[in-house]
Image 1 (spheres, rainbow, N blue to C red):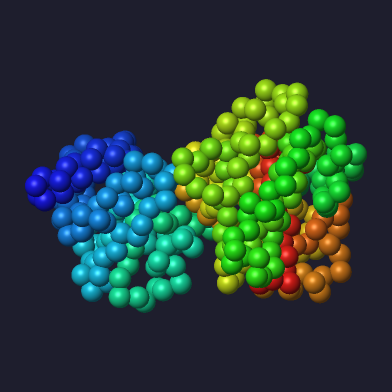
Image 2 (cartoon, helix red, strand yellow):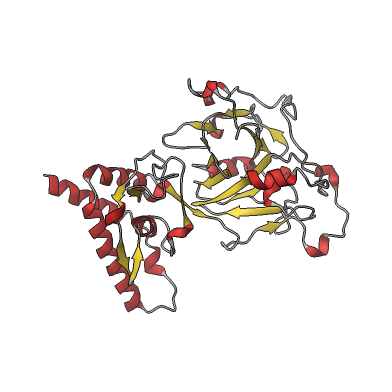
Amino acid sequence: MFRSKRAGLVRRLWRSRERGVDGASCSEGRSRLALLEQELKAVAYALLKRLKERSLDSLLEAVESRGGMPSGCVLVPRAEMEVRLAGQAAPPQLLLGKLFRWPDLQCPAELKPLCECRSFGLPDGPTVCCNPYHFSRLCGPESPPPPYSRLSPKDEQKPLNLSNSTLSYTETEATNSPNVITRDFSEASMSPDAVKHSHWCSVAYWEHRTRVGRLYTVYEQSVSIFYDLPQGNGFCLGQLSLQNRNETVQRTRNKIGYGILLSKEADGVWAYNRSEHPIFVNSPTLDIPNCRTLIVHKVMPGYSIKAFDYEKSCLLKHVTDLEYPDGPYDPNSVRISFAKGWGPCYSRQFITSCPCWLEILLNTNNR
């Protein structure tokens, strides 16, 4: 019975694998692709057979829900973790990440453990987690697609229309609209232990220039912000009601899906894109100081970005000229839009033209 159950779990996992390896570059020969597939299957089976039944259950739950259900770590002893793929060492997190999420994944340095993983903060522990949904891919300066800047070189000398500019929004901005039905989410984000310490950020949800709902105050280390998540706690945007919501906003809201995971870490605030569509991120620490260009980073599904850097934020305090052509901004805030970007590559010049977006107001006194 034990063997048959284990074999059934492995079969279900294999059916859930990503098929991107089968459709790799057309320049590669089919025979080479077939050999790579066979080798990947062989080493994957070898690894899966070493996992305990509980680990297989956790892995299957994560893979079949595509990260929508909370799942436990899939731990492998560090001393026994090395396998080889195409003649090179392949750690388990690389192997299973390639098998179940990112067929083009090449290097374990591209991966970052999420804060919910037991391996988080323990790079030299006796075990390593290889649950692919406990990791994200890093959105670094060399990662495609490239960042989008708000001003193209030919537009830098043109005067800007400030009437539609994005200002530093506050608790009182746009909340008195008769069309907005507000709910107090602050209590929902507080656990018994959370009330003992101060919040580290507040989240405002906007549709174009209208804020929907009240500020959502975050006390825990991380928070999920989503439209629809099979199981999980956090800021549920799907519960926010607004009268006369237009079709563009509703279509964009439906694309939010699992949304993002926002986490406060030692070096800054990280945003992990859990949805099936890109998100777009901007903050003062992602910009170039004393430069007119406002950088908006496109973060693809499964990727994460350091949305706010505490060290850079301290340096910005010594910069006197922090004005941008589109108006003032909060130096301790992050702006994230869902599915629709803004900048010279798009018809939307300002984030207030995006159907659905977030303003993350950071409490830098609590770090």
